Image (cartoon, rainbow, N blue to C red):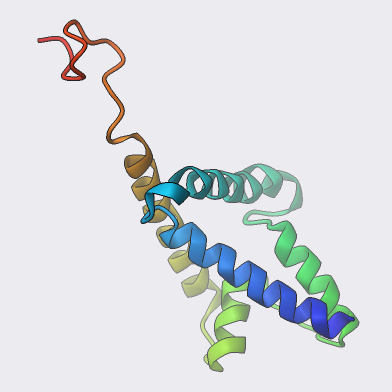
Length: 133
């Protein structure tokens, strides 16, 4: 059962990460992409106040599964773990955290732009979406 859960978490968590990065590309997934990005940020920065910066419940649950499978000395960074597990490369925690935060904020900015770029101006005199003129 724990082996199944391990594979599930690697697959699901990886898919969520990829979706967070690229989900803004498709118009139909833009709103859910922005939602998952905001939930990710809330986890990292709000739950992080109580559980440590960058806290992610998926990582916590996966770590519990890995402990049951005998894994010890897991890194704080899920990205650091994932890179090592999938490629065999050992990256520093600092590099993993830096890349994670930069990619997150770039994806969030793009998602915000993609979700709100075609909205009409809130206060338009002419109703043409061009704003006051």
